[in-house]
Amino acid sequence: VSTQSTGAHRGGGGERTENTMVAFKHAQQLGVDLFELDVQMTRDGEIIVCHDDDLSRVCGIATTISSLPYANLPPLLKEIEVACEPGDFLRTETQEPLLLLEDLYRE
Image (cartoon, rainbow, N blue to C red; front, side):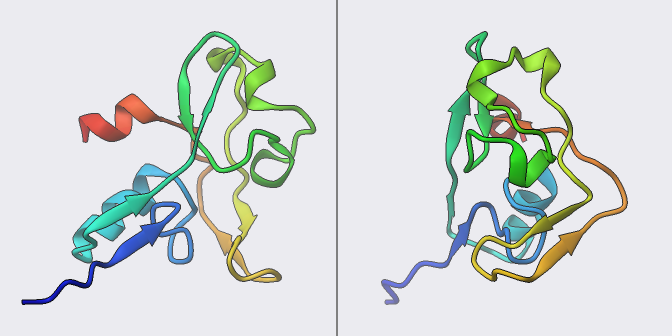
């Protein structure tokens, strides 16, 4: 009996854009046992799956999640530096919204 588990840091942020639905679904398809994620709260009390409260790195805007209502959050950048691999970037075709924790649980 194996006691080892496989985890996906920031939802598998090294293979897909961190903390996005795409990353979590990809990790699930790979058979990951557990997800590591961070959450932040918007000014109006919505819970967002994001490591950083500061949006500079992931959205390119010098403000914080906690200072904005959910409706005013900007989308993620199409190119984000991989947190565990400084200097490496993940690129996507589309800008994804910041993920609501409740949407992750619905999937």
